[in-house]
Length: 502
Image (cartoon, rainbow, N blue to C red; front, side, top):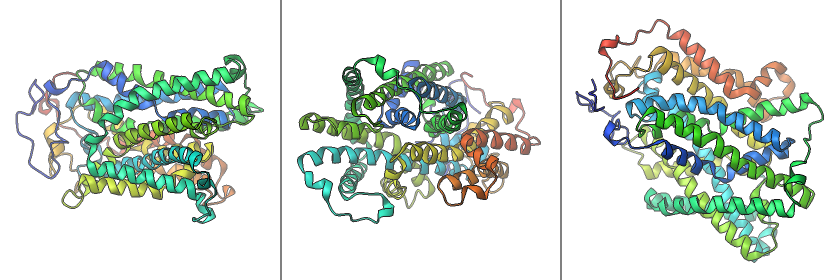
């Protein structure tokens, strides 16, 4: 039971499921306001991948307003599961892995946690490639021989020697920061908060000036010749936009557990997420459209664009700044969470530092340079691909919390390995079946997209489901879970805990 102060009347059970990091945050320690959440989203939205998200749509054929509308719609859609999953964090003060125990079981919760961790490893690889390529753009100005080094890797790797060296150097720098500890990144995060908005605005003004004003830039037409071609690109692109924050839509309780109220997390996310993503994306759209006018070709990668500037000092300063801000974002957003998730698997054998090293190795094995080499790889393979894994998890968790349990949880039982959330040996069969059935419809489309099987080996309508991967997985898993849990009886209301607010 819980008191009105939000603290347990009975102590939480001493078990392997409990740690200080996973314990519920008492109400008097929940201090985040609306503006804390708005600031959090503004900070997370201002990153190179957000810029590339928008400019990849331009490169893919959209005009400026089609790209901006797609991004705004995607972020407005993902805001819904973001706020819904955030509700339990704000109400009970619990993080994502603990909330997942209610639906997946006390042991089964490791499955969604690991799915999220693998995706974070991929993002770590992408950000590390971006930071390493920024170093390459700088070094090649001062050491031209870096561009003509003989190939070391097989042609199938698609990896040139010069960029590869800089990538591994930047990767080692990330590993060194993990060795030092996360505290070392705080000053870099402050630097990022000041630098990136200024750099983005400077790039915007350059594009408007060099592109002869905003008018010619925004007049760049769509490359789609008919409506059918547009929608064939639009729907997977929209799914990719939703997929961009699909990870955070699951583990948002990690942040909302500090909310002063439900209003704070809801209003803060509404104010912070769609507007900041859309605004920063607009800069990417304008600059990318301007490159078509200025250079006669569309350049969607800001690092490639910066490399075209002639002033060595300006390019060097810009690339160093990008590398530092990318390092800060990478450690904070893509390293801490998966490192903890891996450590949680075997606390006696894997500590935070080892978990960080595991993340780093997987980040290389995912071949991040291939994922962002072109818009189709970035959107269709990476963003849409992992959304097909995370959409089902979101559907199950929201169905469980809002429809099966009616927003009522027994906090102490979430930390009890043999309690009501242990189901069968720590796993909830309904959640596992629903997860599998939610992923299954998207598998054929994914396999044809990465060309592991021929496109004509499965019916077109089945492979096209992949264009809606997050939506298909979310709905299928959510509905299957509800159907399988319809006979499940949560505890009567008189046995449920009282909390400070709803």
